[in-house]
Amino acid sequence: MIAMSIKKGKFITFEGGEGCGKSTQSNMLYQYLLSQNISADLTREVGGTISAEKMRDILVNQDLLPMSELLQIMAARYEHVHKRIIPKLDCGISVICDRFVDSTACYQGQDIGIDLVYDLHKSLISDVMPDITFCIDIDPNIALPRALVRGNNNKFESKNIEFHQKVYDGFQYISAKFPNRIVKINASTLSVQEIHDIIVAMLVTKVW
Image 1 (cartoon, rainbow, N blue to C red):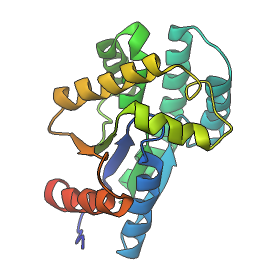
Image 2: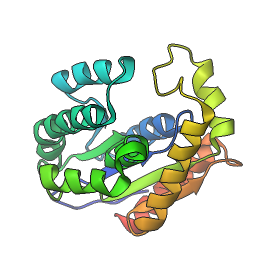
Image 3: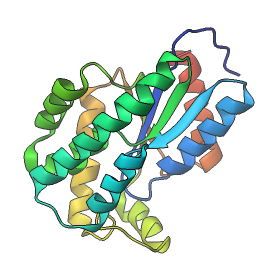
Image 4: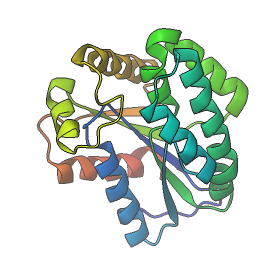
């Protein structure tokens, strides 16, 4: 059980490749916090506001140049952070976000450079970073087929396994780069409930 007595909400993000289960875990944590009478908001990137969701539709369905893709994401994030995330946090509402800057680094950073993505984020979004990030770690050869089974695949899910391996390698890199913020959970042999239990335990230890 989480006991909380804070004035400002916590910013919690979930990361990982396609089909890793992060969206499921985001929703499970959201429901759990509500059950503990903790005010929470569940959102996603790219998206989270009306304008950002429109940008998402372009991003996932149209081919863009790498830099155009990055700038589109950053524009959507700027809207999302200032219109939704910061106001919620300032009101004492914890925000759970399905993807954030780490996904941008691992996806768009393949062509542009991971460090450049973080530099751009810092220059535009200042010091808005998650209090904790859960990276759901699973081999893309296992996870990607799960995503494809869902149907309605976007352009990222439709990319070849080499692309998804690079995304996976990117998450390995940033997990090592930011060990104090990113908690990597090896999901290969764990059930959905076991992963959730680890997440709750880590929140108690590291955040609350």
